[in-house]
Each structure stands twice: as structure tokens, then as C-alpha cells.
Image (tube, rainbow, N blue to C red; front, side, top):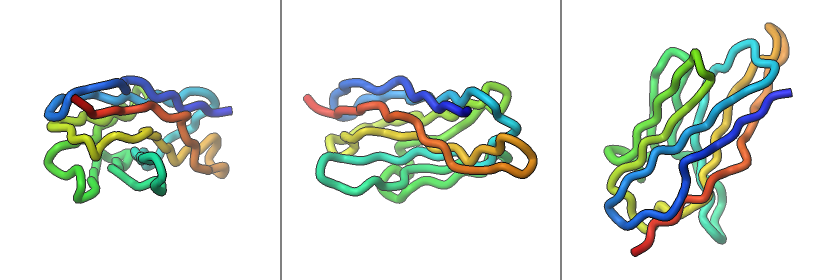
Length: 120
């Protein structure tokens, strides 16, 4: 059993910053890609950022230059530093991990989500 638990969400004013964390635990052999997604009310879930286990990153155009994904492989944790937040960043943020529970067993696991609200 594998769990991903996000933390760090909250209410912030426009222009402010938040740092999200997502810690994976359980029967983990290794984790390949880890990513962040978000879902705003009435909209589909969208991809935000991705980081490989080697540290290569990619960010959606809508957050490029403002958000930064990083990870600590020793802690099985992925982070999302969010700066210059805008009201349109308001959403539930989810992390996803491409997790191997053994050398032959692999699947995606999702966290439960953390709410980010950007409002004055």
C-alpha cells in the first residue's frame, strides 16, 4: 500500500507565495516521475509540473517562471514552490507519483489534494 499526502495549501493574497509538499509512504521500491496537477471549480484537472527521478523538470506555460517543482528522493517527497500567485491559480492541487512497489509492479498513485485559494 502506498499513500501520497499533500500539505501546504491555504489562502493567500494575489502576488503571494505558497510551498506545497507531497510525501509518499508505504511499500515503495522506487518512484520515477512525480508531478503536480490542479483542478479549479467547474474545470477539468490540468497538469502543472513534472519532475523525473533524475531531476529533470517541466512546467506548464501558465505557471512557467512563477512555480518551481523540486523533489527530495531520500524523503520520497515532491515540492511545488508557487510565487506571484494569481486568482486564476485557485484550485485543488494534487500530486501524482509513478511508483514501483517492486521491480515489476508499477502504477500511478494520487494524493487527496490540497486547496489553494488566491484572493484579496
